[in-house]
Image 1 (tube, helix red, strand yellow):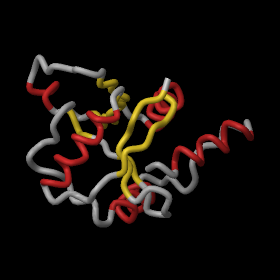
Image 2 (cartoon, helix red, strand yellow):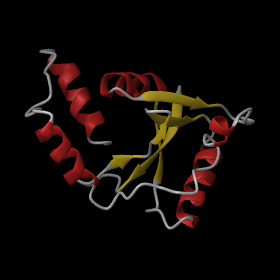
Image 3 (cartoon, rainbow, N blue to C red):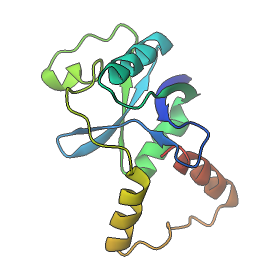
Length: 138
C-alpha cells in the first residue's frame, strides 16, 4: 500500500525526509491521501520552510526504514480529525520549525561525536542495498 511522504531536495545528495519532534521522538508522517500530503507541504512553504516534494512510497518499506532508523512512523489516514494538540501536528506543522540549511553537516558531526564511523551492516546484500536507498531519503 503506498503512502505519501514529504522529501526535501528529492533525488539529490542533500535529500531528506520531513519529520517532527514529538515528546522526544522523531516522527515521520505517512499520509494515506496525496492531497493531505500536498496541503501539509503547502503549509510548510507558507512558513518559509523549504518546499518539499510529495513522493509515494510503499508503507511497509517506510515503516521498516523508520524502525531501523529509530524513528516512529505515524500513519495519517484520509479524513483524519485530530483529537489532541499532538494530533493537530499531523495535519498542520508547528508554528516554529528547525533550521534545515545544514542538516547533513549537523548529522555528520553528531555521528562523529557519538563515535559512529560507519553504519552497522546486516550482512544481507539485498537488505544493505535497500538500507542505502532509504538512507538517501534522509
